[in-house]
Amino acid sequence: MNRIAVVPGSFDPVTLGHLDVIERAAGLFDEVHVLVVHNPDKSALLPIAQRVSLIERSIEDAGIVGNIVVASWSVGLLVDYCTDVGAHVLVKGIRSQVDVAYETPMAIVNRHLAAVETVFILPNPANAHVSSSLVRQVSALGGDVSPYVPTAVYEYLQET
Ligand code: PNS
Picture 1 (cartoon, rainbow, N blue to C red):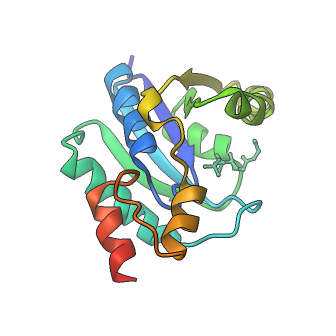
Picture 2 (tube, helix red, strand yellow):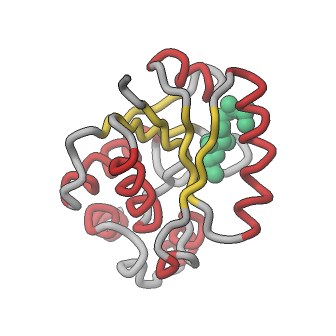
């Protein structure tokens, strides 16, 4: 049986914390779809296509290609994408109790909607403080975000 998992998120932009979760998921499942999803609760920095491109470049640079598909989804529920590609598992990284509180209702709703289970992965604690929103803020104010993001993202933010 081909075990397919989806790692969804805004990835605005992808961080080293995300890459860590993606790499761990790629080691656990036969096929991993990294899915860029628009989150209406957040104001976006990067266009969706740019986020996809930066994830593709970052996973290639990190050498974690092979069983990873990068895609985006904006036409309905996240679980609709899972059903379309035959995935029964969502993977989320958990940095703290705050993430548990944020993720738990979504995990239960996604299970009710389409019997899609959510697997929580504990990333490297070295990245526990890293978030896309902090990267956006520090970058916008001229700070150095190189410790938090892949090189491709750092270079993109420098250019824009
Ligand atoms: O990186 P984020 O912003 O925390 O990711 C949140 C995301 C995009 C995974 C979440 O907002 C989501 O699942 N959106 C899809 C809409 C959906 O299916 N909602 C109902 C079930 S929670």
